[in-house]
Amino acid sequence: MTKTYANLIDGELVTTGETLEVLNPANEQVVGLVPACGQDELDRAVTAARRAFKDWRKTSQEERQKVVQGIAAAIKDNADELFRLLTTEQGKPHAQAQQEIYGAAGLAAAQSTLTLDDVINQDDDQRLSRTRRVPVGVVGGIVPWNFPVMMAIQKIVPALVAGCTIVLKPSPFTPLTTLRIAELIKDVVPAGTVNIITGEDSLGPMITSHPDIDKITFTGSTATGKKIMEGASHDLKRITLELGGNDASIVLPDADVEKVAEQLFWSSFSNAGQVCIAAKRVYIHEDIYDELSAAIAEYAKGVTVGDGSQQGTGVGPIQNKKQFERVCELIQDAKDQGYNFLVGGEGGDPSGSGYYVPITILDNPPEDARIVAEEQFGPVMPLMKFSTNDEVIERANNSEYGLAGAVWTKDTEKGVEIAEQLETGTVWINEFMHLSPFAPFGGHKQSGFGAEYGIDGLKEFTYPQVITVKRDAVV
Image (cartoon, rainbow, N blue to C red):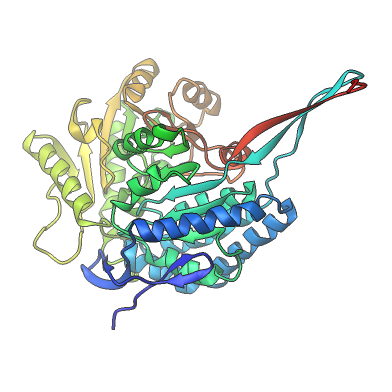
């Protein structure tokens, strides 16, 4: 019998009469049922969060840290169950699911140590002026399907540490692991501080427009981010948007081909390419292009695409049918345009069971090709030649996105010099996808604005308040 999962509202596990089916993308079988919440359930959750905020905002930093550390412990202590459930609903291989679960626990533990200390602006005979940070209020969090647990924790934890309460909406494609975590933390978090509700995509605009929600934090597509920004503008909600990316990797001619090939492959194909900061455009200097492209293609041939729960699988399925069809469309477009494929080129089989797309690597498509200009968000890697550093910097920056990028070279000084000219929020030298809980992460241009992680991310959940005391005043 298929399990029905409950939402967490005001410290209670709640179900609804209507439910949504959650599919395993590896075989398209139903693996869980979740509540189909609407305005009534949202109102109840927001009311609980608003009521809880009155007390939670007054708690000490130590009390908040203890609660967040309890969340981290609950995830870590149940990691074996959680990563298997995550693979079942999301599709990523077990090893990558483990990384997400343990990463989420580690993120919560690390961010529990962050503090927002008062800043003294003036302290003299005339007056004492200090800036303190005060919680913004009730937060609405909207989470995507590619890293559902990490993104949920990425929103819950800083909200709580800052003194806010939260109403969180998981993606309808991947709510199960988050709801299981809700069960585990029900008695860890004070009632109403964390509320997790599920529903169709239509629930998102209800959250964005709710008059008793003070801030929206969203991770997802740029198109949806624009709609959220528009909806939040009506009552000037604070917003943090982490949106799309078309991240460029630049490989200089001194890079070690043998060492770089495997790393470059996984920088594009981890989580079947469904990573906002994956390498989606790979620029290789013409001096090593043939050798490195052949090495990447050869490595790719040894990677198995399949069910993430099966031993030996390196790349799992696309998470949902809509994204599967989009990736297949981009591959077909590249094929119709006559572009050369080093690996793959056939797309997925829509008549088969599961949303599998073969590993696909393109050989030097033009800059205006859709597969280069658009964010593919799937297991497709376009490799392109470049001649000069100035040329490749211009090509890498020629995008509406600006989330992340990477430079691969033995000359780290040269790598930094190039990195400083890239119009992105994060640039790695000789690695990929490393995010620190203590460093800000956010995008430039249409990759969003605001920050997550670190002190900068924590400040996103607060207002500055300046208190000034006039000394020796006559009153």
